[in-house]
Image (cartoon, rainbow, N blue to C red):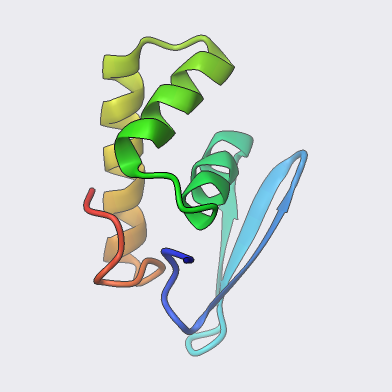
Length: 89
C-alpha cells in the first residue's frame, strides 16, 4: 500500500526520483536515498525495518538513519505528499 496521498504521482530511477502533486502542479526531486525510502514503504515495509534496511544498504548507523528518515517523512507530510493516515514520522 502506498504511503502517498491520492493526488501524488512518483517515478524512481537510479538518480533518485520525482514526486508530482497533480492537484497543485508542484514537483519535488528525490535523491536516491529518499526514493529508496519511498520504494520500501510502497513495498509495505514497516518504518523500523525501512531504517534498518537503509542503514545496512548505505552503511550508516541506525540512529542516524532513524532521525533522517523521520525528518524526511515529516517534510513530505508538511508538503502534502504523504497520505495523512500513512507512516508516522
